[in-house]
Image (cartoon, rainbow, N blue to C red; front, side, top):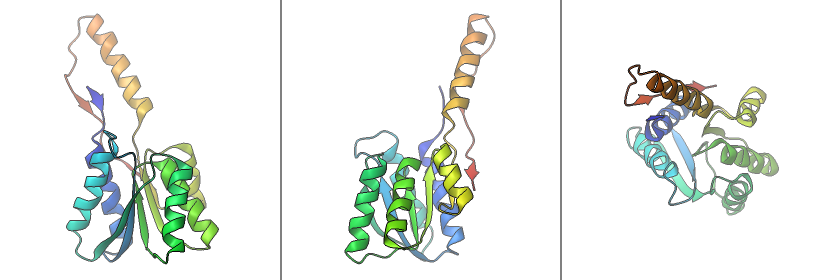
Length: 170
């Protein structure tokens, strides 16, 4: 197994946002598809991290289905209905960029944090549109898996599990 722990990535991302908010504020959670094996632990981690920060209130949790437009529209509907929030935790960066789109269209701001460290998110962070992202480095995972396969074929020892460390990109 070569991979990353979705729960730990999301928990670290949430704690980063909560520290930025100085432990106080209202946060919107945008999750992926309900049955997604990555979204389920990420959304659970967002909520678990909030439980450890008594000044943080989860304003709502909505589905963005890991799609920019779906996340944008879900967040836009909430804002149009009067919802306010200081921060947003998105279970992936594509949805986080959709949240940024909705905020910009509404003339509002909030600290947005995602997961994946995709180029669009890095650009949004550099522009100041997103606060941060947690690096889910699929390229590094593929590299390590390939290296392990080659070592295995050569008869070399290979660990049974390699988990990438959590890295927050800001």
